Amino acid sequence: MKILVLIGAPGSGKGTQAKQIVDKYGYEHVSTGDMLREEISQKSLLGLEAKKAIDAGQLVSDEIVIGMMKTKLQTIKSNGCVLDGFPRTLAQAEKLSKMLIEEYNKDIDKVIYINVSLNAVIDRMAGRLTCSVCGASYHKIYNMPLVEGVCDLDGSKLYVREDDVAEVVHKRFDTYMLNTFPVIAYYKHKNLLDDIDGEIEIAKITEKIFSSLEF
Ligand code: AP5
Ligand code: MG
Image (cartoon, rainbow, N blue to C red; front, side, top):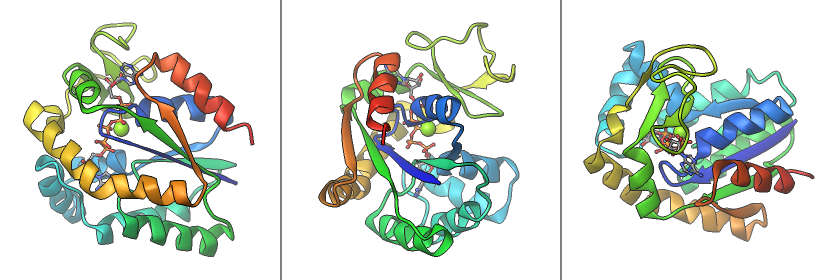
């Protein structure tokens, strides 16, 4: 069982690269953002609570997200998983290691940090399209679907995420710098982190990630 963490700013390409890793290694993609959006679409209590934070560009509480992840980790059947967007706070990072030890008797194998600037984030969010069913990301210029408005993977409709408006994107980036940037330093200190330039072509980033995963 391999445990990978993808960490990076909003729009850094975590979801895009997670799909490539899943295709190549058969790992399970675990995105807390996708899980929260699913709760919102089902109008669950948790979803209603999460929506307030997401719409404001803030983090959902550690309590909710850690609880959701604990349940998820108990269901993983494949030979590995890619955690996309978790952990995002030091409290989540510490709790993740504890949960992994309890469930699988091991810690994280590797943390991939996709390193991008605020300018790249703003540019990408302005053109992102997301699959309404599987959550796959596309871009109007950099990563176009084969058929306009339709997901290549499952044929579902693409939409613009509500939190991709410029004002919320700025807030999400500030939230990331405040809460998630220290997590990067934490994993660097633990010697688990690979820092990958996230401002090159998608396929080149994938190549770099694959070579980093040859462990
Ligand atoms: P989440 O859905 O995880 O959002 P995020 O972290 O802000 O990241 P995104 O999904 O927006 O971007 P991405 O890095 O996946 O980039 P993508 O591959 O799509 O979380 C949403 C919200 O949920 C959070 O704000 C928070 O409120 C809450 N939440 C989630 N997890 C939480 C947690 N653990 N704790 C508390 N709250 C939590 O790519 C972006 C665009 O760029 C696409 O258009 C893509 O096609 C394009 N692109 C990708 N790579 C490249 C490239 N190399 N060159 C050009 N374009 C590219
Ligand atoms: Mg994503």
